[in-house]
Length: 353
Ligand SMILES: Nc1ncnc2c1ncn2[C@@H]1O[C@H](COP(=O)(O)OP(=O)(O)OP(=O)(O)O)[C@@H](O)[C@H]1O
Ligand SMILES: [Mg+2]
Image 1: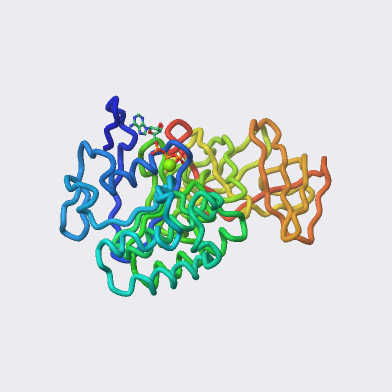
Image 2: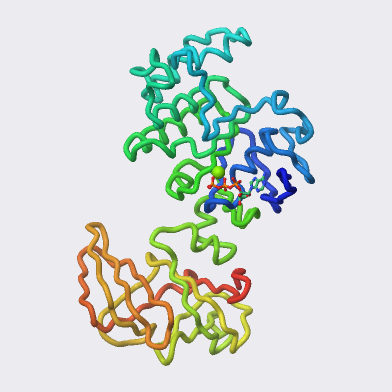
């Protein structure tokens, strides 16, 4: 737990067991406690309870300088009178590291920094400063590397390239790394495992596939995945059938969806989560959830149909194949494979299985 000036608990429930050489992404909305978590690990924030270990070594009471952790935080803290090269070399020379020059030039070229090595920080754009801060964290070759939004100021294309390079360098050097980001694409592309955080608590810790395919609660289901998962109110109508499926009635006579979730009693009101990619939509009538197309977007590789469901507050978004086109007012039927229809507790958001 981190204690601020007024004893504010920014982080309440974190339990991450990270393997050596693993890259973990801490993903969550603004204010959920990501930076605070990194600062606690780095030793820049006081931990009121719990333990932080690197291997068998308890570090939570050690000062930041004794923890052997490399940090790249959002504020760059570069030395203004020094060139970029000297900023990168500074810590290494102080520690008389052998091969410092070679290390600095190798890493800076891979982060596309060759053109800025002789400039002073004041002459750099924020994206360039961010690359210097990242390079500075990397050249120290720390066993543990903490990066807070390391690519947030780069433009889209540089961001993709530097992201790939960061992943390659991390593999090559084997730094155990925690990257904070609120960008799910960045998290999914970089991470071996993701910790999805909300309100100071890790909501789920797993591989990108686990988090996407088996969300622990509605928050995780809604935070990971683009377009966002559909969340519809429904009532379980016939408990467990012989096929091990339950039927959920949506809206007023709009039809039903089947879920593979067992153990949800008849008559329970639930929140049904279905990803737009998992929905199958057909024109006309038939079994499934009947809906009316309100809005159709053709997005080259696929389409997105936003439809209304009679008697349901929420609409449903379906990702459709590129060759299909739908018109507003068109009647459609939506279904999904039962194992991809998730049920959540309407009050707590917890997954019902
Ligand atoms: N020392 C402190 N005293 C009081 N409140 C604090 C303190 N440190 C952090 N907070 C609060 O704790 C919460 C978590 O902050 P934190 O900076 O860790 O969020 P974050 O997930 O990094 O967000 P962002 O994505 O915006 O950077 C915020 O609501 C913040 O205002
Ligand atoms: Mg932050």
